[in-house]
Image (cartoon, rainbow, N blue to C red; front, side, top):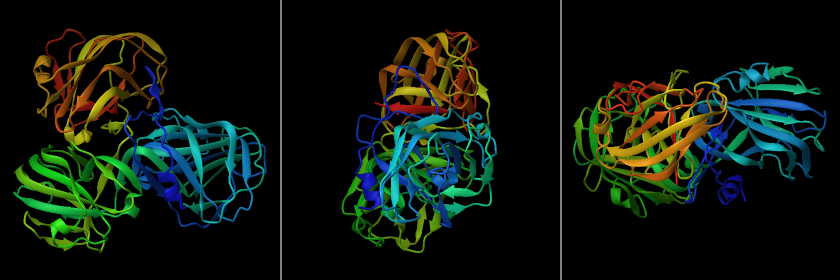
Amino acid sequence: MNLVSKMLTAAVSTAAIVAMTACGGGGGGSSTPAGVFLKTVIDSVTSGNRYPLNNDDAYQKYQNLYLASEIEGSGNIEKISLYYFYDEASEISCPQMTIRLGHTSESNLTATYADNVENGYGSLQTVFDNRTLTIPAGNAGEAFDITLDEPFAYNGTDNLVIEFERSAACSANLYAQRGDRPEPRRAYNFGAVSPTATGLDGTLLKATFAFGGGDNTQYYGTGLDHAYPLTTGANLRMQNMYMAADINGSGPVTGYALRLNKLSVEGNYTMTVKMGHTSSDVLSATFADNADKFVTVAQDVTVHVPAGIPAGGWVWIPLNGTFNYNGTDNLVVDFTTSAGQGDLNYVEAVNLGGSQRVYGNNVATGTVDGYVNNAKFRFNGAGMSVLMSTNQTGQAFPFWATEGSMQHLYSAYQLGSAGTINRIECRANNDQAADTGYDYNVSMAHTTAMDLGTVFADNLVSDKTVVYSGMINTPAVKAGDWVGINLTKPFKYDGVSNLVLEIRGTGGSGGIDCRRGNTPNQQLLWGNYDAAATSGSTEAKLVDTRFYFK
């Protein structure tokens, strides 16, 4: 059985969410089955690397850096797989092994371990805790799995550091496949415990990351403009085919996003979206022939694209259904845009040289070509993140040492999935000790508005639900960690509407800034440090937020 088959049939664990936690990486999941997918960072394999899986020294420490652009995915990393460079006839054991994962802002490693992690992008998380790593016998080119003690919630935006540290020698040398980069990707130290690395080079281990839920990016490179499906015409249709080998996963698909090729202009597009399996690797000109059976995942939904999303930004299509992808067949995504109002927005299409797209008027046949849209598939089982910040600026509420009222507006194009929300988190902008004394009322509601008004009550007019009321204690956090609230009354988000979140109350003694960034619309409303404020000031800003589903 090959690596993909072994991983896809393995049971996927889900991290428990405690009453109030800070998350350096570990995340929550869903009670429904999680989808799984694999992302492999492949270098041209130049040789084997036996560090840190060797019997030379009692102590070794080793860091490797993988870029977000290489991983092309986000969600709960459940396993890491490395690859045998030589045949290994016997099992190898590496006792007293600890493995840690961490987000980082570094694009090149430094020779000081501590500078490569916990530099404002979250705590370093122990995922394999001081125990024996057993590596079975295997053949050159095959993979061996390292199953993590708990998932690591990788955000797909920051780069990723894997840190190995052991204090006892392995039973034998294990050479893993490696490539060489011109920039520093490995920091290492042999023989003696040291706060700094003794070596720095471009060695990068070939690795596969197994995700249990998350956003699986299908990025084929820089492409050209294509008007469909965000078009101002009417009754237009397009199908895209995504190959099973590219998706490399299976399970419930709950979201789909397209990548813009130009700065967005404001537009509204009403469309129906379907997904289907096919055993063919080419699309025909006849739409109806291109899948065994199409399943509707969005029926006559309106996609609102605001002005100001930069080229390369993502727009989530508001799905209100789920498609269970089998992982074996190719996947066809079918769009019918029945109406478009406002301006045209271009999505990015890349020519793969085959027959992977058919488009035209909503009639029986269309034009076939080799273009396919860069896209993301969201597999069930991980949090839904809205990451707006591009630098470390903070918002002084909700977790602050004062009282106040605040609303945040999340647009459907930023969210991407329907579900029952049972936890909300923001990303801390500063280090902070554990704190007590927060007393909050938290409410949520659907809305069709794209901007918040200055009157709090006017923004919660449809189905306002009090989802939490009471005291909160916050744990110690590092900048970049996630801190949040378990809702006492989960909120059923429809996946199509926009979402308003309101927090009112009094803060603690220290407080935690929440990281925030700019948005195209007025998506932040804050009261002047008054928990009973009826009106306030709006800003085109939004905090980094993560939602978890029941």
